[in-house]
Image (cartoon, rainbow, N blue to C red; front, side, top):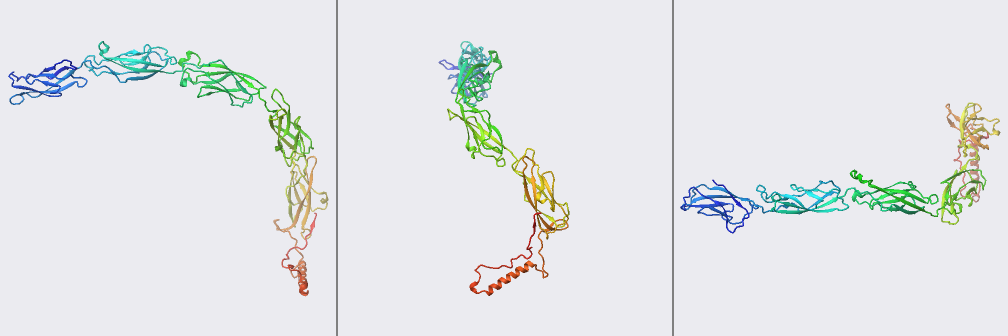
Length: 607
């Protein structure tokens, strides 16, 4: 029974390495049998003595290259060449020796771990492999150890896991560490082979450092003319952390200038930029003191025990004096004056003064671009406004002008203020008809019949509103054919005073109407209403307002007959006169253009 041989790898002897011996029961020792070998490495790596069946290895074998060889053996009759037994298969297994050191999967490992981590925090795991046979002895049993990197880090011997070994490792003190790990086979025993790898470990930042101002007090200067938003100066607190852990927010927490100044963070430089928030005035306050605080917006609660993550500094701001223009007592002035005011009437005054400590004297003037007609003037010394022309509210109700105040000692320093002057109404306009009135009355009209409603307008604007009264003119009250009825609502009606009118007797009436207001002084005017007498249908609709001419029995009116006779006489005269006495060219007599239907006479009455 044979099917397996064992052979040590890496044989170093000078002779061939003996493997084993094949023997057949048919072999009587007389040399009649011959042993032959075939399969993996037969005739090359492995040779057999054909007489004795001894097998030998001719070369050094490496289990890591090929751990098992499969061969076939057979015994044949030397004379006939026939096998005396069936071919048999056997294996040669190479026994392992510890000839391979552990090799790490990476030559260099890179890892990170947060600073200030607790002891035992996982960093990275390294792995080494051994090509030796793990099933035979301890040749492939690897154990890890740390050669460099203590006391900061440790490694688990069986897993290769690297952990932190020292408490409170601070990135700000040291950021980079180089650790050397050894992997050794034979379970770490003496004589085992080993390999090493390098692990570069970087401590990552955590917010364990509060911001700190390098100095406790800062001082800046700014002119009082600085507009809101003007930067005054920069302050910066330092933070040993990095990235978002080093971000800083600045704020003004207290001080006299809490509402006068602001501070914003420059995101690129992490500086606090102090800016003007409101308009400054040197004459009111010359120095401001602020308390500015710098804090981290991203705080890790586990480090709060280290103290507050903020710092404060005092900022002193000195306001510098600037020559300022005069300042008016108001942003705008509104004055009133009656429209009947005489020239040189004082309306009111404006006041401005130099806000600087010098209190330079001021002179006043009117911007003539806003008063082109020079209706108003101003006293350059005291700012009194007075009229220089007569006013009319109905022409212009509001006058909007600009007054200029200028420092006498420094004319470049000037300021302007709007001045609105309202012209107050005076009852200086009489009411008048809202429109031209021309109406008609039917010949068959009845007494007290309304034929027209009158309305009036007034350019004035009384405080209590318009109150008009209407009446017939005194000269028309007696014997008038019409009456005026005042409706007491600023309207009036024209009423008939009799029954029936005759257009042949009187075709048109002119009715004078007096309109008065109720203001002081009372103003009135007289307007004329034209009333025509017309023929109307039974519904009162006007049909004709012309009076017919007197008609001749032949069908032509007397006026028409006279006009025809005159044309005939003129034509006869031309025929009888010599040619030298003919009229000049262009003289004609037109008879066909006469309107024979028109009335030759129209009658009018003031009533």
